[in-house]
Image (tube, rainbow, N blue to C red; front, side, top):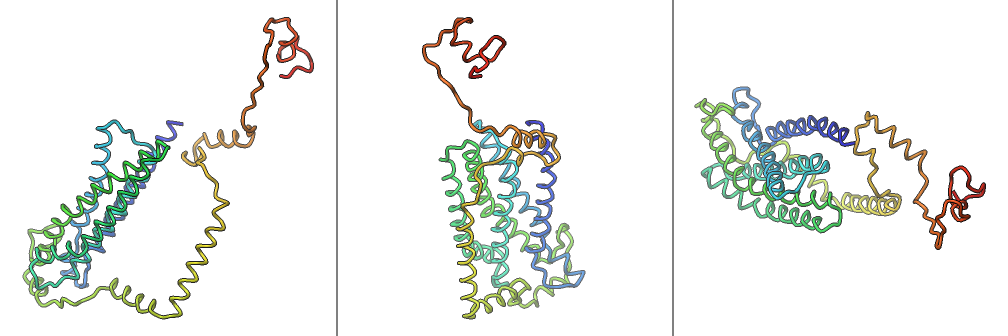
Length: 315
């Protein structure tokens, strides 16, 4: 079983890597906020280095948490290796996108340092409260009686806390430098290359420009203001809530051993055979008091199962 679990972990390493690569491209697109389709302008407005730095900060937070727990002798489990990277990636990317979007909403006539400070003061409290709630929620799981859940909750709490520290320090510094690069019309990935024409374009750019995502959110908010839509959303939510409460009694508790193994593992047939052919229920114990243990006694012949025992022996 241990070898099959190791094979499953090695196979999922590629899935984790592809997830981080996908999030890297997602952050590059979302953080960039490209507002011009000109080929000579796109390379100055993208944020490839910023997206790469954000993903690396998430990786560093996971590695830091693993190192801290390893220093205290806490061993990692399969649940930690499989879940924590995705959890840290989702939380980290979300907060970084919030900071970048808040910066884009600031007045472009202000200095870059002032804009970054205003963005942090605007989005920082919500990010801090969210991170605090997440850390406390995971720390509450430390008090559970299951060792695997306790280790997972402790690992997740430390990862989220370190990730938050990186977001409000290192990522803010990288965001400031990248914003200064854009203002100076320096090319992404090659900041030593600049373009004066792009700099003049940035100087004449309208600060009140809104992107496609902002327009979509504005349209959605206008649609949700309608009374009929609000009632429909509320009734739909209540219907889903009561349906879930009605179906929760059919939820099976427990974790089958076949779930943790690869689907093509040879142990799948072994566990399935045990589940279908050896399902005999809990063990039964018989206690006989004052038993004569002499091989020729009637007590032994009534309970034994070897040759010479009574035909109606208990075993």
